Length: 289
Ligand code: SAM
Image (tube, rainbow, N blue to C red):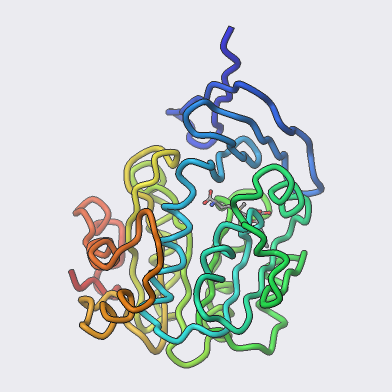
């Protein structure tokens, strides 16, 4: 009989994954961690019954979370990742010539289990000399840090449980305050078709915090429900502007081997369907495409 893992994210629709092997299942101080194998998706990690990442399609999310702000900014030296304990975002940041990347995840066990059971995600990133890994609450960290960051990536769980504090206006205000000039914040905003309130609320909370803000979209098969939205906000850089020849040259010159990201995708990701535009505070947001 097939052993089904049923995701516990939406109230009225769900997706299931056939488990060929349970690699790990246990409770940390913060959440339930389940790691299992699926024939098509490879190894899968779920937190509190919600799929976070799979070996097969994690590259889409992690490349787009990192390379869009990195190339739009052009001189990303100091980076903060809040959450991201699986190490996928860290791996992609380290492909850029950064001086330092700080990862703050509340759950040290997610970091350890990812390193042990899904080593391809961080690809040794946690041991890189440029990585500064802190086990602690991201809200506390942004409230207390004196550092300034070129890019802040909120690679969070959904806004339930420990991740809830990473979706408040007060948190976004602190993120804005710790940005260097031309700095940009990137947020994970769920799948708007099924989580419309999440996008609507984030959009409302960005108003007055960021002079420039908006959303771009990615298609990740295991984040069921169509496009996932990633948010961005800045007080010095409008990353939604049509890709300039300078940014395109930057992308070409870097010559990164990617599997989703390229300059056309970078540009096109800012084109939003009407049903997503309708959820955004269009008066305030920077929607140029
Ligand atoms: N790619 C994923 C997604 O969108 O489904 C996100 C993955 S990542 C594993 C999410 C991480 O956020 C988890 O490791 C969790 O421990 C961390 N997290 C949740 N709340 C946090 C907080 N308040 N401060 C820092 N990290 C937090």
